[in-house]
Length: 174
Image (cartoon, rainbow, N blue to C red; front, side, top):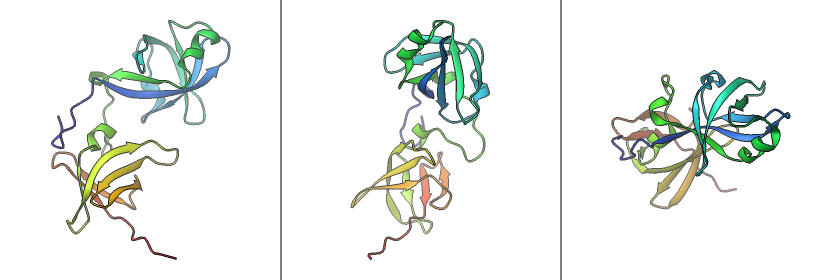
C-alpha cells in the first residue's frame, strides 16, 4: 500500500488489443508501458473486464511500438476478434521491474500535488492514457485540471512521501 492510500491492485493492465492481425489468431496490441519482450511464452493474461485468462503462445515486435500476440486458446482470427478493444492484464505479482523515474499509474492516484515552492495545488485523481504522453488529472480547490506527464510540468514524484511536484504554466487571457 502506498502512503497516498492506493492499494496495489490485483491486476495490472499490460496491453490494449487494437485489432486482429492475420488469420491465425494473432492480435496487434499496444503495450501499457515497457518492452514487448516481457510477453513471454506461457504468460497468463486476464481479458478485461471479466473475460477468461489467455496464455501467450508467441509475441513479436509489431514495428510501430505495438506487439503481435498469439494465444494458445485462440487459433484463428475469428476467435481473436473477441479481444478487440479490450485490455489484457497481468497479476500484480508478475509486474515488471520499474526503472528510475517510472511509476505505475495506480501509485500516483491520491498523491498530494505541490508547486516547486511547496504550495498545495491539489490531489492526483487519475492518470489518463494518451498517445503522446499520459495526462495527469489533478483535483484542485477550483475544479479539475489536466497536465501532460512530461518533465516540463512534473518535476518530481516521491511515492513514499505521497507527493508529486508540479510546475503548472500560468494561463493567460488573450
